Image 1 (tube, rainbow, N blue to C red):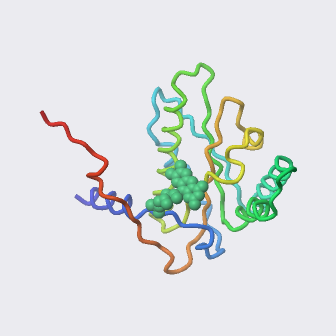
Image 2: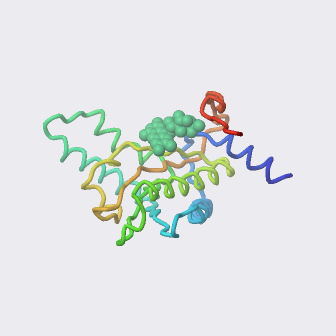
Length: 194
Ligand SMILES: Cc1cc2nc3c(=O)[nH]c(=O)nc-3n(C[C@H](O)[C@H](O)[C@H](O)COP(=O)(O)O)c2cc1C
């Protein structure tokens, strides 16, 4: 069946495409919208739909770059490293779009936190597969200010919410689609048949 072939192909050829593999071209916003729409169809226990995204592009990338740089500086006055600071600032500027990935806890805490993180990760995978289907490059980064508690409000997240990282997006340079590698699936699977 065509669906089976397509889904196998998309899942197995989805790759992390890093910023040094980006051409500098800008991705059409319509593709980003498609990614976000597909994210919204992720599975979600009790339909809490915990994923929250902030999309940075154009001058927005500069805002993110400055925010990250300043927060790094403020946080690391005693052990400031110039190269880390430069990386915090430069990464967003190497992209066409950056999507900040947030997980929002509902007030009732209807579910254990881990379930909401899992649902958000499913949403990210939907975006990643959609980008790959268009042969747009992206990767999930948990660098930058991801684990800085005080970064949350900048991304519209509350105390109970989590910032889970960033999807860095760009047009890959020609020929920049890498081969993947995985150890055999059988190594991680046990069947119980009787
Ligand atoms: C939750 C999560 C966080 C990740 N964080 C980073 C990261 O901070 N930096 C990085 O270079 N890659 C990061 N990656 C991408 C992985 O390195 C990548 O998926 C892995 O090398 C396998 O390559 P593939 O995605 O091309 O199959 C992350 C992936 C996931 C799922």
